Amino acid sequence: MTDALGRVRSALVLGGGSEIALATLERLATRGLRRAVLLGRRPEVMRVAAASLTSKGVEVVTLPFDAEAIDAHAAAIAEAFATYGDFDLVVIAFGTLGDQTAFEADPTAAGHAAITNYAGAVSSGLAIAAALREQGHGMLVVLSSVAGQRPRRANYVYGSTKAGLDAFARGLGEALRGSGARVMIVRPGFVKTRMTDGMKPRLFAQTADQVATAIIGGLDRGASVVWSPPLLRPIFLILNALPQAIFRRLKA
Image (cartoon, rainbow, N blue to C red; front, side, top):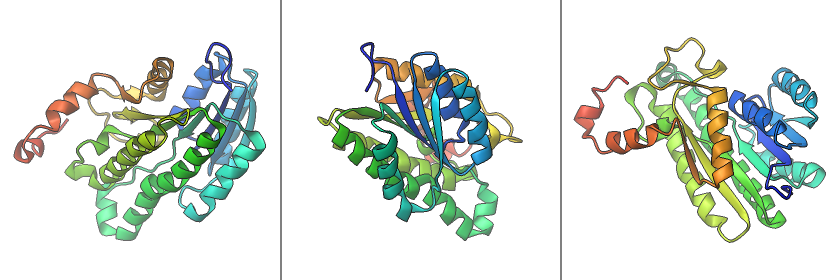
């Protein structure tokens, strides 16, 4: 349970190697976080994160988790809640960017990316929602992307998976109304992480730390949607209203 000041005491992260999620936990560690359970398929990254969090007084558990193994999600999440819950905060942070040209040459690879980014989030998200509903409290943070707001030719496979994830998360938030649990969707722009290494930074590029700051701010004010940076919200209101002939000419 959160403490008397409403601070997060326990957190579960799916995608335990996510730089954004780990930066968020680092900030929460200075605000009363006492337990973090990291589920992911990068044990070496999670070990480094665990050492850093442990040095700040956080008890850390790392467990294997494969976003594509959708048949195993419900059992893995139920076990995490039964063994280490309850959780004040759960973060769905796994995902893959991929390359549009490669996806067009290998449709199977595109399908696997869709399973990871969308189907994996649906199967795990529903299992998390059931557990949060049962415990009667908790925040589910879903890392979406502005790429899902209006997918571009250059990354429409990735953008379409994020569009689906965003719609799912909005519906899940509605399904949890009145349960004591809530959903917060995070829509970052370009973030300089391992996933985007080697890519030319886009307009309003940020670091994982900057997105983490936006997430903490959203948690503090009880937001349902967080844009990072906030300026992207009005920008996409305009972009979504543009005729396709104009939108396709934009390079930003």
